[in-house]
Image (cartoon, rainbow, N blue to C red; front, top):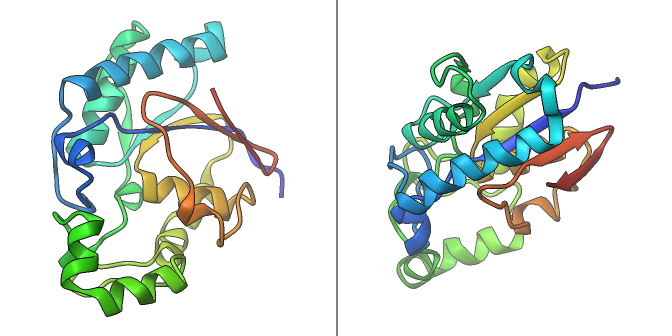
Length: 197
């Protein structure tokens, strides 16, 4: 099945990102660096798409950090900051009881489960309400991806980026959980390939 290219933007930095904390589905705001990264992503998108930048659909996770990134990106492009859609299926992976912790804290407080996750990061689901595996996130986003029929700009999260790459054949389930997902950059996904711009 031939798919339209996606221009994927991970939200800008939050204080929890800077501290290495698992945000999951906690609503955390962008920090000053994150606001700058949103504008930077807009400039990169303008360089990539040129005059077509205003004609594409724009779709974001409904979480605050993604909405603020989308609005900053669109403002940098000279577009109406509010003229985009949100979709619940783009929310970040749920880390359950681990949300708010750093990986170091998880390994110290829950070593057996942390080791179990290390053995199979794609399929492992943390403990606690709302927790998900990357495989579960991939199932959640697949119907959304299947419905996209033209080039689209998406602003979402690192875990969602991993699930999207695997779903689109741009990364394997083994490599995706270990990949760095950059902030302030554009991940171009087209024809089963990936490239950072």
